[in-house]
Length: 296
Image (tube, helix red, strand yellow):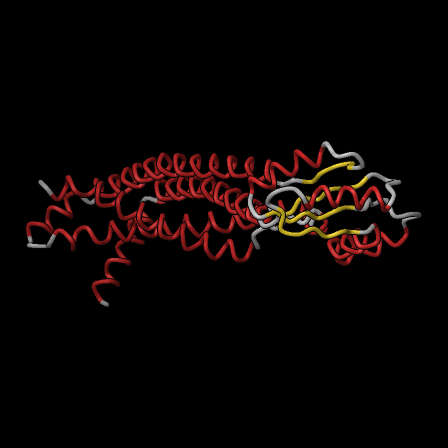
């Protein structure tokens, strides 16, 4: 405990004597982590949105034209039943569609009570067994007489998968580049501190101090830089994310049936990730900067 206390005291003392460099290092690493945090937020939400939509990939909504007779709808249903890969079909009336929309709107559902008439069409929800069947059925249903429109999510899922992959690759490339830059920044900061204590380090080595005894205060200085940066970057990411959700509005999110990652859950996980990255950067930068002085 006394050794740890000595190392921390020396680390804070070094930071006090080199405030400018340490402050610059914290700002630089905070900026790096903030960029990574925004990539991380985008990646998680796109993945969650894709997963939410993918649950409905096996459902094709076939909207019927206004004015169709029951017999026409029965003909369409019979044709759909003959398509390969069909699991089952449900018929949705205009009233059922409106009630479902009210549920989706949540507390704002009462706004639909003042409509002069129900604008929603009748439809069939067709449940298929696999994606290939869904694609073939969507094309066949589009050519049927009496069908007004089709809601099929596979194209959206594929596009979201591409976006998610792009964000993932971009995040990894950005993280690799920014981590290297951050390690260099920390190494240079610690190196300046080492220069200021070069004679003191020489005396300590002459008196028999081990390499780890000399190295420990500088490593703790790097760890402190990383932890401070992680805390600040997490807080900024949380505030920006909450602001974005506030601008979009929770009501809009609910109405569009879009799911977003809760800010509190995101912050806890992001803080853990940033702490690990920050501490690793601090340790690596410190070891690199002081190694050449210990090898003399």
